[in-house]
Image (cartoon, rainbow, N blue to C red; front, side, top):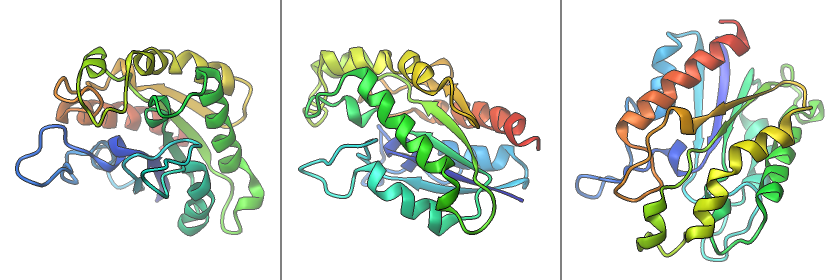
Length: 217
């Protein structure tokens, strides 16, 4: 059975934009990682590593331990051996509290990919392949909402430019594959940032097809 680590933010954790009561997390069978597990029909074990607010490379002054670069190495080592690592990050890096260019965000993602592909990281198994899922852009409505006051019009612009920037930053890297969530995953109108139930379903299904080709399963 293949081992797949899914490393991401609140859209991997499964934040529900329209929760019933105080349960803000989609169920196991709704989250795209759960859909992925089901689609692969026992051919792979999906390891969920989603954290709300996780960035590619920034320290959030209001929420500690959200820097994805700082935790990735430990996660890779604790879950080895791994056949594939799925990275889906970037949405939190476009928040207005941070001020990088889109190119700098993409460079940060390239650094995460290098960490995953570094053979010195592992003492069990071989170095894994990498699937980078470029997050679906935040919706334009978020610039007018009060969603934690975190996003503005520039955030929207940057999120829409991530796919082209990631593609350019990763094009010459070995063992790296790209999936554009914008082509399949619906973002909720309710909060402008988190995936709907249908979005999770469609993303999990698309990821499964991509992973079947990558791992030949």
